[in-house]
Amino acid sequence: MKYAIRDPALAPEGRLKIEWVRCHMPVLNAIRKELEQSRPLAGAKIAISIHLEAKTAYLAEVLVAGGATVTVTGSNPLSTQDDVAAALVAAGLSVFAWYNPTPEEYRDHLVRTLENGPDIVIDDGGDLVHLLHTDLAHLAPGVRGGCEETTTGVLRLRALEAERRLAFPMYAVNDALTKYLFDNRYGTGESVWAGIMRTTNLVVAGKTVVVIGYGWCGRGIAMRARGLGAHVIVCEVDPVRAIEAHMDGYRVMHSLEAAPLGDIFITATGCRDVLRAEHFRVMRDQAILANAGHFNVEIAGADLDALAVSRRTVRRNIEEYTLADGRRLYLLAEGRLVNLAAGDGHPAEIMDMSFALQALTAVHVYAHGRRLEKKVYPVPPEIDRRVAELKLATLGIRLDRLTPEQEKYLSGWE
Image (cartoon, rainbow, N blue to C red; front, side):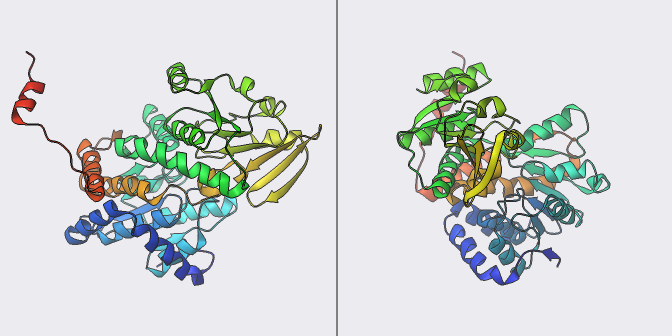
């Protein structure tokens, strides 16, 4: 066993966190029982790069229960929880991760995670896949395929596919119905606000919140902001989404029009420099800036540095930038994913479905990957449906079923 973690002595605390989420992830528990009996991953080597906290740790243990050898690293420098990493090492897994590594350490952890020569990669944002197409391209022929967790990662995969450079098949788990309809919307919506409120200890009700990006994550953030009593403005580049936000009851405007009005700004686009110098120059004093996109590029930190005459940490995960005219702007969690860098991420019950998809898709990849073309694939609909059915069963919810007459009626043309 190989590992690089901060402190192995933290393992008992991390184990408590893993046991807590396990109790609230009944879908994954049901899948674990099946995998323990059938061992469909026997002999598989899996490399995981997902935010290394308790729910990810439990996914790794479920894959081990299915017979896999699993190596784990984080997908964001500020989201790794050192006690959880220690708990996985104590359980016999190889882990290369710690909280707040340097850029060089972060890259080294990714490289060491891939040195096991994985059959399957489970990625969050595309860092493992990027290495397998650049510096570690010699390992790519051994990869049967993989799964991508996030919108940002899927965008990177599709760019590789468009250039005909994708070296192995990948499944867009992010695009599965039981992922984005719940994880991206309800998970992000709740966890972003949990992270902001925990970090700032400020009220949301009555404030003006500017949500930039009205994809499924932005929808969830806006919905929860309204539920907390905020006045919500949405900024978009897509005209259809802008109309949808308008008809959902939000004010929709250009980001430069919204910049002087907002108390809290949240980016959720997957793009870079969404908030930049021209916005910062007109924001009100004590505006709060937070990011919910995967990479810390949506809020232009270099522009903040250039405009500020002073900078200081005023609370954990809050940097105060004082501008020449005395206005103060507050950046949360270095502009990284606020729900994970300043919180515990999505609720366990939400990640139960997302990680059930990951587990079942990994089994599918191991069984079929060698016969697939080097493309980006949707999650097979039978896996999506199975996760939904398992979730409903854990909730004690029964569905109606079509009668033979109804099926005949729906399938006919007359």
